[in-house]
Image (tube, rainbow, N blue to C red; front, side, top):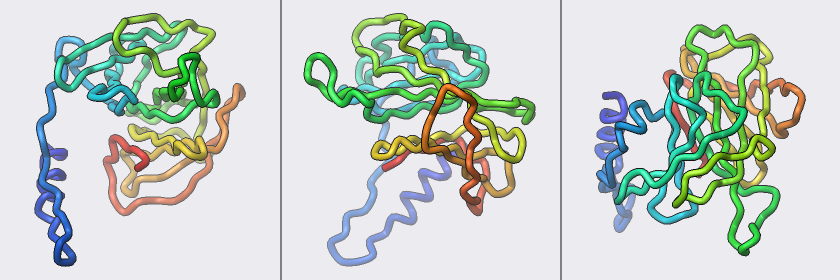
Length: 214
């Protein structure tokens, strides 16, 4: 319901500020999620592959990332060996350190945010990073290729559902959900030791559930 209201408000408020400015004409239906495989989608991001989206389920699912074609539905699913879905909430994509793969194509990483914490009890949260899989065949991502990073808040546990990754700098940003004013935290580097996030400020609203860098 909230998403529908937000989309409606965007449509109503997108009036031209000057002559000739184009207005937003959406929202548009581009496809439906395969409900059998993805009954509770909690994160979505566009793949470099045309018409393809990467999706994850909320807590309760196995550690799986799904490739979904907006026209054809589910393409493949990819298991993260050694990972655990405690409460996966968001997914992001950013260029990898190895800029091009063996075929000369742009190489990207997927970031999976295990950051949900409804009762604010987790001492640390987790971000997984994997090379973007091939979308047309299911696979198991070897544990050696699944990077696991633990992060903690400087002021105690928080519930969050939104993670953003800056594609230019690699900065990871987390925005909390249940605070009266959503709190913003970030870190510049993901390392093998637990990283303490840095508090960056607040937003004048609440219930943020996803985010992306444009």
